[in-house]
Length: 361
Image (tube, rainbow, N blue to C red):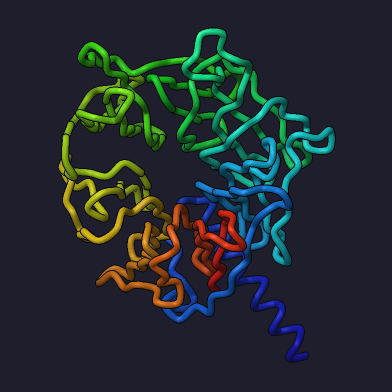
């Protein structure tokens, strides 16, 4: 009898979390994330000298994806965790839907275990007039619960980020002002109306789509990344408007919106919060660059950066996760559902670069 009650209560708790997540409600952790026990897995393929994962998303702790770059002929750019182990998703085979060409994935975002998108680039040929040596193009792929398949979009430049407020409201942005939007039935190409100095280009770095208000961060620079200026845009009624710009750390480059609707950004200088149409630096870090942010409420947020920097915010203060504190490790992405957390970064092992994924619960 005790066993049945125990499992019944677990089921009720699980359904509560699923319901909260689907309705965009803040999820309060049942266990203090600062007391998690952390275990690590290393991702790499035989013969590959570099496995570098940039972004992560999951529908639950039993269904987590991480995407990035692998030197193994485009293989190993996506891995899936099924509660027991990390498995290389074979996108370049018939079993994986056959995404042709050498590819790299920089972002992943989903709405359920059977509706997930990933974005990046693929090599479509050699350039007869280098540099560069190769010609690349935008890549968006979609998972329907069975197979990953390439989405047909007009050729554009490599994509940096993909995000959506619903399965019928999605956006993806990238280099050279490449922007795509999806309305539930078709993808359309768009761009940001911005003038840049001669010889410079505008690149979209991060997008965050809302039901009514959306945001975007991009930058302009020469190809050597000199004279770098960042821009912050807001979209209302399908019109993108420049709200702010900076040539120094005034707001970050990676956007995140909490379930309550609060907008955050991370990058150089730490963590920023958008309050009353202005950015405030709520956690200043000068010793590290923050790349990843994810949370389930405004009182449960993880951030991850270089030099082993992983911090947790509980609504009152930021605390470093000492179990992951390693100056030789750069962390790129983090994801949590409020009950468990995953942090992915890069390490050097056996003379090659591999991805390490920490799992806390």
